[in-house]
Length: 360
Image 1 (cartoon, rainbow, N blue to C red):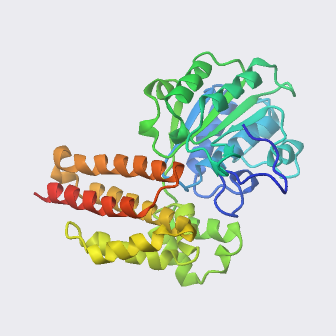
Image 2: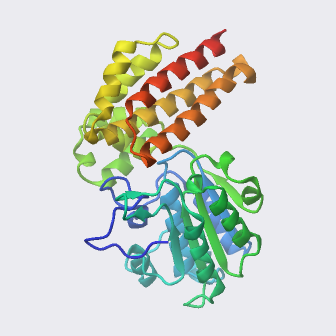
Image 3: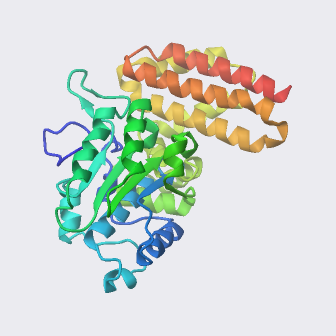
């Protein structure tokens, strides 16, 4: 649960670098169909109380969730003319509900995300059960403004077993006029019992044109990029604004090209190049490049699997295993501040092995 940011507040786990937070973004790019589905459900007074907004990281799920929450809190009566005549979920930033939400001071809204650990000066690697249980206090009370109570969970991927079960208990018997909006980068991994009690709204990756528009809206330094770099990042980002912005940050594009060269040689491994990459990512300043590396590797696995469906499940299963192993090892490396070099070496060894199996 989070409240208003101030000058001395810790960094937000759901904010990418210094880009505008999703709650500060006025436009939802590329998800007109999803907005229409939400509006239709609300207008007809058949709004499910729990939603999972699923899809690739960085395609606008959180931005849509904040627009969804803002619209409901600003328009608590689905029969009102404002709702019936709406063509999207936009709300004027000058609306009192919008202003309070931007400041995280709206009494009927809670944001649950990975919190800051003042001891380690880092974010916790998971959403803890105690973070989810704080939602109970909100939903035990009547809505402060007589309308809805809304919880945004960013992201369900960060729940551990205990926090997922705590959330399930709340969703199983939700109070009236309550709304749970859960963002999920890998919705298939959400606890099945939570999925069964929620409406799944899967969002498509954005078009390169929408990615460029969203990056420009994010402002500097990304908007200062050349048109050629913007287009290259949008294409390589595969529909993700966050991926495109990461590529435009510093040496991101050059690193992505370097990684694509190494990945393209698999199952042969250029160990000299991999060791050089591992040394580059090992330093204290290598965090952003490390995240770019992980994103590029995951994109490569995803693209490889989609292009190799004819190989059969048995041959492609090692890619899924490698994905899970990399994700778990990356979380452990971050949590315990471990040397990144061994992880980079193991990633390429495991990918080479998976590729040999898929091609055998």
